[in-house]
Image (cartoon, rainbow, N blue to C red):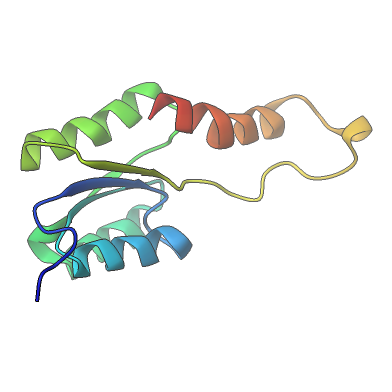
Amino acid sequence: MSLRLEGKVAVITGGASGIGEATVNKFVAEGARVVIADMQVDRGSALADKHGDRAIFIRTDVCMEEQVKAAITLAQNTWGRLDCLFNNAGFGGVRGDIADTDMGEPYQRTVGAMLTGPVLA
C-alpha cells in the first residue's frame, strides 16, 4: 500500500487542536513529516511526542513574522525541504456590532491571526 504523502514535509499552523490536529494526524498517517506550529505549547508538544520522529512542535504566533519564518526554517533544516504549508491558525476573533468594535488590541489580534498570518506564511 502506497502512502500518498510519503517523503513530503508540511508545516501546519494551528496544528495543536481542532482541524489542525486532525490534519497533523492524517498527514502523518499518510507518510508526511510535519511541523506543528501553534501557540498551545502543551498540546502541540504532546501531539509531536505522539508521532515520534514524524512530527516536531514549535511555538508559533502567526502574527509574528520571525516566528512564522522559524517554523518554515525548522521544516527545511530538519527534513531538507517544505512541500506544503497549511494556514490553519485562527480563533473566533473580535465579535459584536461593527459600530461598537474597538479597533485596538482585540481587532488587531483578529486581523493579525486571520489575515497577516497567512500572508506571512
